[in-house]
Length: 182
Image (cartoon, one colour):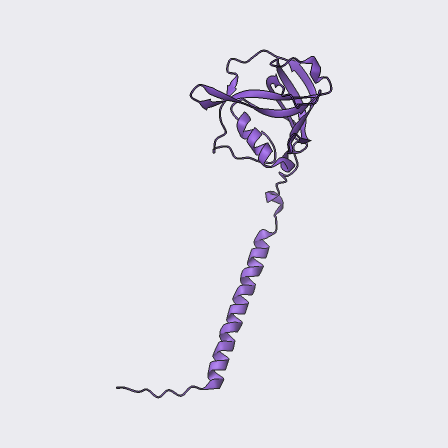
């Protein structure tokens, strides 16, 4: 059996621990300052994508359901955004006289479709029969139909012909939502 006799000097241990803590504190401080400097926005990197564009975004059938999904998931971001698209007038029994869904049929496979669209509000909505194809322009606001949902306040509406491809595809994961609809 081997026994080692080590004599510990309390002053040396205390000074060593103090130096190590001092070095750690300086390192943490330097990292914090570095992160703070990196987080300061530079003028060439400023992007304000939280403000909806004042331009009217024309929604294409290819990205219709992706945009619809994004607006439903993050309504507050899209309030004030002006959009234009076409679909057919669709009504449910619980709608007010000035309301309808501007609908499209979403292909869900096996030759089945599901009606999807934005709830719209238009003072003269009664002038348009159900299943009439129209093109609308309007502004996204908050509405209420069995809970808070996007409501498109229509600023212009006109009849249009049914497109050659009236159905739209299901939302996909390739779409990257932003605060402005393109």
